[in-house]
Amino acid sequence: MSDLTPGDFDAASLAKEPGGPATPPPFSGNDSVFARLGDLVMRPSRLMERVGARPQWWVPGLIVLVVVAVFAWLTAPISGPEQLEMMRDSKLMSMMPPEQFEAQMDAAVNITAGKRIQQAFFAGLSAWIMMIIFGLILGFFVRMSGGKGTFRQALGITGWAGLLPFALGPAVKAPIVLATESVFRVNIGLAALMPGGEPGSPVFQTLLAYGDFLTWWGLAVTVIGFSVVYGLTRKAAITAVVLPWALLSLIPLGFTLLFM
Image (tube, rainbow, N blue to C red; front, side, top):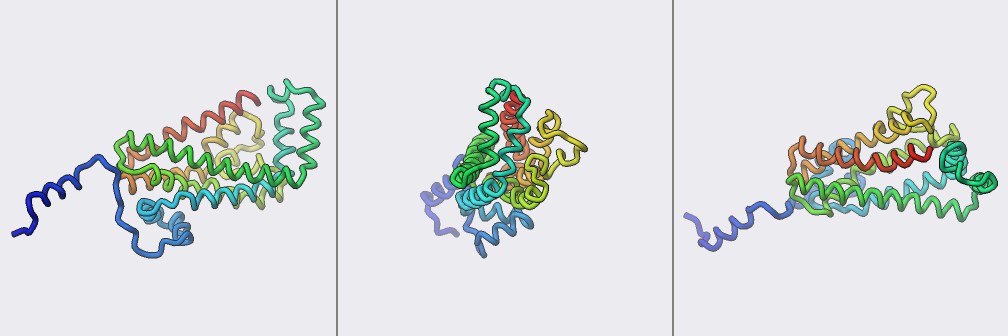
């Protein structure tokens, strides 16, 4: 015999009806930032269980802002002149008077402390904004694919997974960049396997956009996250994550190839 009344049965059945976002149970155990970072590498499924219960999407964003800002500050005397030198013979620079180009080169070589700090901050902020936009776009696509979750959870998934390319990547590259005095020739992906590859060549830029190993790792963790939190099948999650990423990556790649 049951003590539930017919009204209780109706309430219970309504609570089980699909259509609303999933509400994962609270995660039991250590849920510190360091525990999450450990799970990011060792147990991404458990990390995403934590994210489903408590997205904390701003935490990885702040980490990325700081790491990218420090990286940009350290490498500013290298990246500025190198970028201008790469674009010296580009279509964009051909429309600029030679004296204006030389003035920009001089400013990049002799960058002031204030300008260096400003550029570093906006580099970190831009990386965080990119992560937020990517999370909102993926949240939309995943929900269109039948996933049940909130946009806060989507931002949490893409934020924590994004630590791999946006935070680990600069941390690994920084000492190599300082040692080689080149930003654009240092990468962790297929472009590094291109012998004698010129950073300005279309093939190099394509490999740079689509062949970064840490980006692939981050995408794999993102797929796991949407499978765990949104309840998607692995195949549906792969389609909903990889396809938007591939299309979005075409935008900066297209601009680069157009003006190089």
